[in-house]
Length: 221
Image (cartoon, rainbow, N blue to C red):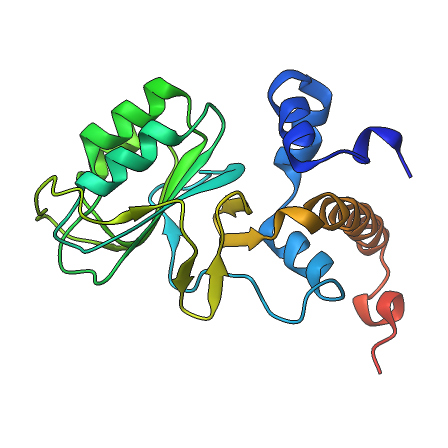
């Protein structure tokens, strides 16, 4: 195994931030490749259902700083942002999609702080402004209205998002296909497997380009 892959999630993200070649390898990985890699590591599918990027080609990778709040309270997101470090992903779970807990001003602030992106299991607003900022935001819903900065929720607590539990410091990966949350303890192994899957897929693509049928390559049963 390549020794530079045998590192903690924190060490991995340090490499991601500062080593161009390694960053290029990571950013090329897709959430489908990652979910394939996780099949034999965990007994559930860690996909956050219904959450998609606000803009094509948005990608995120970072450890989760979590916030749990009501849809009427966007102030809890500010408290979570204050706890986050550069490269972290802010992960917000709201109790409904009735009001937005994230928008232009919070995106601008998070971008200035150097966060990797924001995932909202709930609603956001100011979509056009966020797209112009080019700050990666993934959400379940879009609405025009927001509540108030009540700050009545909790930060850095486990979140239940559909069938998936998101724990603080889990690794969050997102792209055009959606968002995957990987327990930090297995992230390095999952990443190794995903890189191998990517390599195998490229070999299959090369054979298809050479005239082979897919069925002759994978030999389906």
